[in-house]
Image (tube, rainbow, N blue to C red):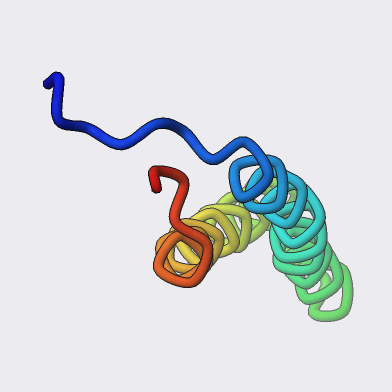
Length: 78
């Protein structure tokens, strides 16, 4: 553990800030798409909630992969 590089706080702040911005947009748009599709097709409330949750989960998965890619460009350690 002693050979680990110190944390680069500038890169850390950049990645966290971008994750908040992109995460809000990505999860918000997928959640809203589920809401819109449920309303447009007149689906029952339970099915609408299910579509919204699936959309939100898709947004979180997209955010996970985005953060992984961002950490390759802006490494936190080093």
